[in-house]
Structure formats: C-alpha cells, structure tokens
Image (cartoon, rainbow, N blue to C red; front, side):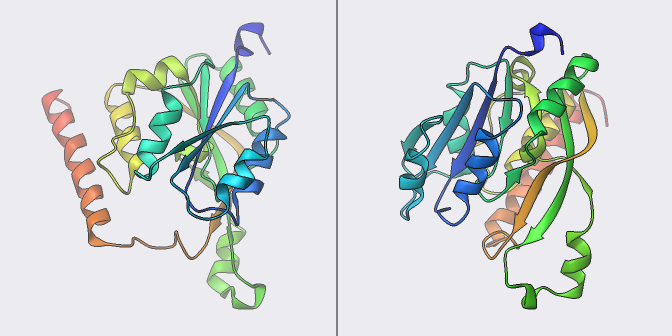
Length: 232
C-alpha cells in the first residue's frame, strides 16, 4: 500500500442506550488489522450503562452530549476528525476485523474513487428457537451494504457533501448519499463482507409516521436538486 494512504482513519460511533451491544462494536474497531488513528465514541445522552462501557476504552475519545439524535451525534464527531479518511459504525453492529485494511487497499488501487462500500450479512438478536425460517434464510445472504456502517471515505470528499441533516430522524445516510450522488462523488464496492448488521427489537421497523415523512422529505429534496441541475 502506498505511503500516502496511511495518513490516518477517524472512526465515529454514535451511541444511545446500547449497553447490550456497544462493547462488541468498539472491540471490532480497536482490533482492526489496519488500526484507525482516532475512535470517537459520541454518547447521545444515554441513560443506561453505555457510558461506563465506553469510558473503559483508553484507545477511544469519549464525548457526552445531550440527546439530539443520531445525526447530531455523528456531526459532533465529524467536527473533530483529523484523519484523511472517515468511517462510521452503529453501536449495535460490528465490523469484520480486516474491514479497514481491505478498503484502504481498494482505495489505494483505485484512486478514482472517493469512497468504498462493502458487503454485509444480517443476524438476528433473539433466541435461536424464535428465529423464523425466513429470517434463517435471510441471515445466510451476503448483500451489498450501501449504508454508513460499511463506508470508508476520504475526508475531503465527505465534506464536499457536508454534514448530516439533523432535522432528519430516519434516513440520515440516505439523505447524505443522495446529496453525494447529486454532486458526482464516486463510490466503489468491495466484494468482501466488511460488516455484520444486527437486527433486534429496536431497529426492525419505523417507529412513527414522522420518520416515514423524513423519507418523503429527503426524496423530494434530491429530486429538486436534480431538476435545478437539469438532470431530470
């Protein structure tokens, strides 16, 4: 790998009441074969034992903020990054241990790309006896992961798009990704599993109609940008 590709990765993990899972997420970052130079653990006002777990990692920077949602937590971390590459991880998922190394190599070999995604598998957080046949089949699939947990992106490219929209409750990354596509940011896809995505009781469905409205809002905003640019 070329030396100019080893100038540092900043990883941001937003956390809200995730004491059941957050240690596994952090461990998967700390133990990467290609070590990040910064790990930001942004506590979005957790009221459970998450803070105690996060503070036990000397390798990471712990930051507490009042609860304001995932986008605001992500933006707190983004305003402090110093690495030339940025990666994100939700506190209930975890990375394969060669995730960063494989993606850094991909970007070194393919400098035309601003960022790179990878594949993922899903697993269900419930007793084995309660997993349905459909869920069992689903857990064996290897799927492309065009969401933030699988992304590694050059910092300069990320900030060409801008921070996450803190008015959006659901679909934060979808909004950012559409803005990135609208301005021509180029993404590669690594044909390797880089992420294990946990499906559990708190993330299996939209919780209120307001979140559905967020999807409609961001889709309309993307279409408006494309019309303005003459792409529709």
